Image (cartoon, rainbow, N blue to C red; front, side):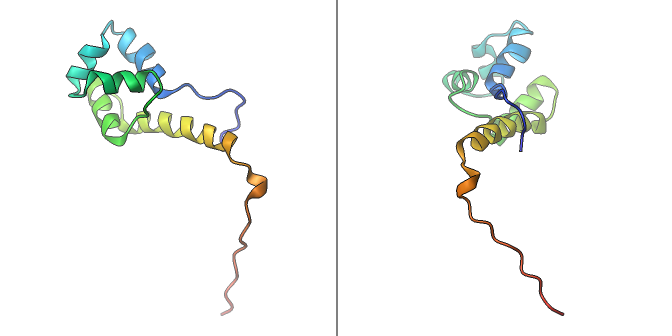
Length: 101
């Protein structure tokens, strides 16, 4: 469980700020370079879509990092939001039964 008060930044914002804008690229240019529809890449950047495993592989190849980097950003983002959404107090606990030898 992530123990932070502030939500993690959506991976699309990180993609835009640190990888597209820093290199003075356009969304269209990156979309074409990774064989992706511009509208889909724009949806990721605007937080409407997440980073899929396939997109993570494409981004890792394009920007010289790892697919795990991108997937971890997405996982952390989704997990933080899930932790805020789920009421753990309503979950039943199932205890492990010890088998006798």
